[in-house]
Amino acid sequence: MKNVGLVAIGRNEGDRLRQCLTSAIGTVAWIVYVDSGSSDGSVEMARSLGVEVVPLDLSIPFTAARARNVGCDRLLELNPQLEFVQFVDGDCELVAGWLNQAGQTLQTQPQIAVVCGRRRERFPRQTLYNRLCDLEWDTPIGIAKACGGDAMMRVAAIRPLGGFNSTLIAGEEPELCVRLRQTGWQILRLDAEMTRHDAQMTQFSQWWTRSLRAGHAYAEGAWLHGKSPERHWVKETKSIWLWGLGIPAIALGAIPLTHGFSLLLFLGYPLLVYRTYRYLHTQGYPSQDALLYAFSCAIGKFPNVLGQLKFHLTTRLGQRSTLIEYKKNQ
Image (cartoon, rainbow, N blue to C red; front, side, top):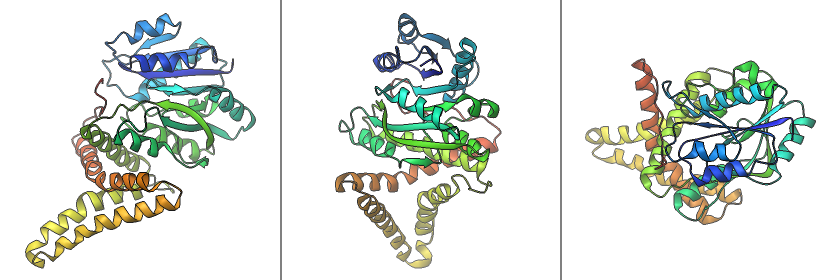
């Protein structure tokens, strides 16, 4: 596909990166891998496959958004005529046929700026946390508000907007999609297999850190675009503050005034779990998966609110947010 290029980003992804790159070689002519300080031979391995490698300047704070922008810039230096860019994380493998399907979709639907498909976990049953990731990726098809890290984008749509916001440590894809939609573009999610992801989450601490990062992303997204007509991530942020801090603070703080009856507020959490479970079950999710995801949504409010607090504290102090990593090899 001469009009499609690919940008992969990663750090210390090892064999996952090899699978990622080999899944694209032979399908697209132009591939750029942006490395963020790997120490596992990723750079040498990528070059041995004939892939263009750009080592990211680590004197500037790293973000995935900046890595994607750098990769896209280099891709267009190599071939200024490229129309579409497939972005993919280095821990993901492209499914055969996806690049052709995505490219044809953008070619025939000029109003679409971004097209994405189904990201699936490679080992969804290996751990509960991998399963939660797999459930998280299972988003509705059709016209969407946002995409994830794996998506094919129209160069003519993203370049005038400056690409991704390079200062964001998370949530950069939905933020770019907000700006795209504000200028009249659409985001499309196809009912098609796109990538296989390897979360490698084996510990509760990893899930907690990932949830904390999500809370940070919600806070920053609402801070940037919460006043727009769609009030980007404002509802999600309010829910995090209510369940992650508001209810516990009121329940515990009001014990002396209510003789302990304020603790009944904690019954709201089982109700929250039940409501989420019931909704997912009506959407066709198996009972076990619906219950697992419902529990994670409720418990996740606590690391979420810590992420919110981290963002607002860092912003108030005039500091720049630093990367929040959950993978062991990072």
